[in-house]
Length: 389
Ligand SMILES: [Zn+2]
Image (cartoon, rainbow, N blue to C red):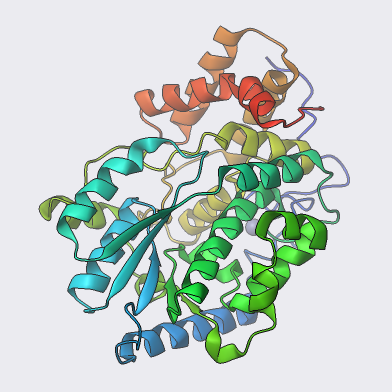
């Protein structure tokens, strides 16, 4: 299995000596001390600004008087532990009138359905489910099949994932806009919050910029344009409830609280996305890194900064010690071999199980995810995604 590795840093690329991010990673620069801009926190001002703004909007929402209409907020409810925990808090502690909005993403497995059923029984909110399979699939086909934007910006290696999320955030925005609901609550984690636009009009503009007028028109009709040209006071505002918890987010405690309230059936794979293998194909093909590279490097950074560090990164767990550069490179070899239809299924499976276990997955979870990688080519062809490697 030891062949020359096309993803290893070449002479023109260097890797950060703290977190292993490479200089060719979108949005990353490395200084002459061999430290990346995230590790040296050159973006610190910008990050603080975003936190300050989102914190203010959240405080304003918490203090707001009940809305004139039926609902104080549209709550984007995935059924995962974070959003279930927050939905319960909104209704039972903040006393908000909540429309719990679930967008049925066709790429997500059904593990969350059980939690949604429990929440419907036990939380006093109105539950709605929205879906738009044809258009979200059309958009994903477009993202995967066209060339990646170069030079990249921060998070561009996750463009298909970010686009999918933006698509259903736009669906939620349109729903709230039609129903005159003043706030939209979105349970993004702190890392996502930093890079997410909280101004509704900017979310719309960003989508037009990425996909152009024609495709945006095909996907959403005239609706987005109405919103773009309406008065500010008629537009919903996005709030990020986890902003208030950013210092003491603890997934184990969240699960404990939910279990005690009968709101959670545990599954280690709760929001597994069936496109995960293809998301990795996309990031390796265009940017030479695995999909979770930023998350993993952020974990490596935290461990190095603080020897006693034992907290989980938001949502995803990594082991304390992780040879990120090597795991990243080996995963890339397997992913690209599967995409090309090369090699033996059993060999790929064994290698993937070993790699996912090194990233702290249990053996069952590792095997489940590994098998989904083996099916990458059939999932791609069903969606019309070309694996032109
Ligand atoms: Zn770094």
